[in-house]
Image (cartoon, rainbow, N blue to C red; front, top):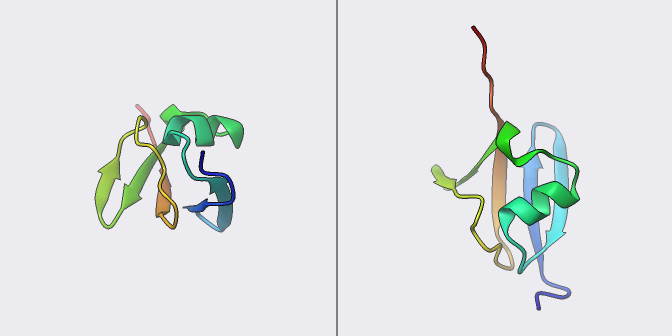
Length: 68
């Protein structure tokens, strides 16, 4: 499922291409990104970690910043 169909994830100056069909969480973990450290946004709306990536999608990854 999803073989050959790709999704683009952008984080700062990095661009990742991942296969469609996986959940956002699976794709992030495969890239070595801890899902809880980023928020995914598409067209100004948050994308949940359980979202199944669709061919041709482009998501922006924003770093979560915390402090005290």
